[in-house]
Length: 68
Image 1 (spheres, rainbow, N blue to C red):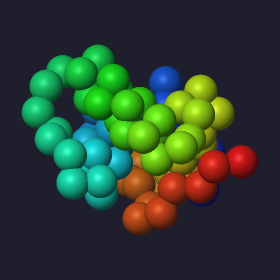
Image 2: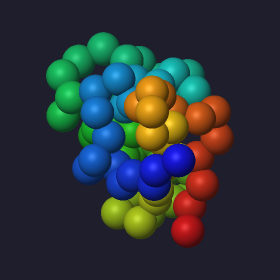
Image 3: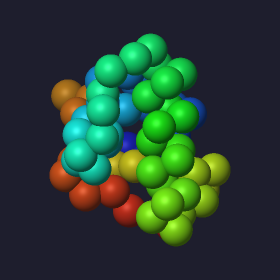
């Protein structure tokens, strides 16, 4: 497992997080990042401090994100 910040997420990881929230996954990486940032804020999280658990071998997202 690897902890990653919003800025470190790859395009596919951003899409995975957006899908989990039922949000659109269309657009460029910057669009996806902005959409996920807004979603985190609406959930009461600070996007600059939020960390995502990533499976280190596959690079895929786990189903649950945690904030520390």
